[in-house]
Image (cartoon, rainbow, N blue to C red; front, top):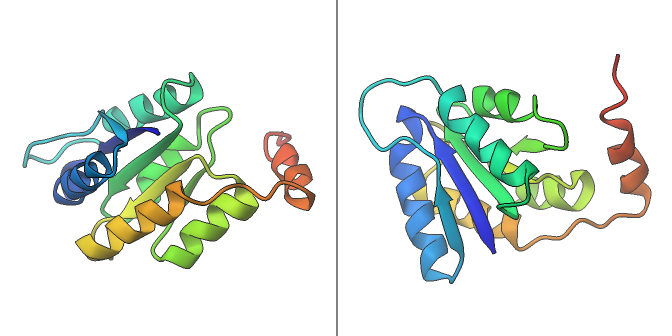
Length: 144
């Protein structure tokens, strides 16, 4: 699976661990994230992940910022992107099964490195159930 990953300064450590973990599992990781220590603006690193997923260059995306909120809000501005903030394996599973989320948003300051790896694997290994959930997904872009 091809996975685009992006992060701001708060997500450098978790991004690196996830990237390493996914690569060991045989996945291709497209790093769009920040690698430094200085404070940066998360949209600069989240928009490229959304673009990779939207254009089909990546199967899914993983984005990491302090709370997960700013990253998810940014990603969700892109048509066809459904970014979900996940802080547990159960939430990650439901985001995929029921919401067909295609980007995982991780709150770096609120979960452990180990939990981040588990949540990411749950997210990428869970499939959308379709059925009754599809009609709900179809209604998401119909806002005015």
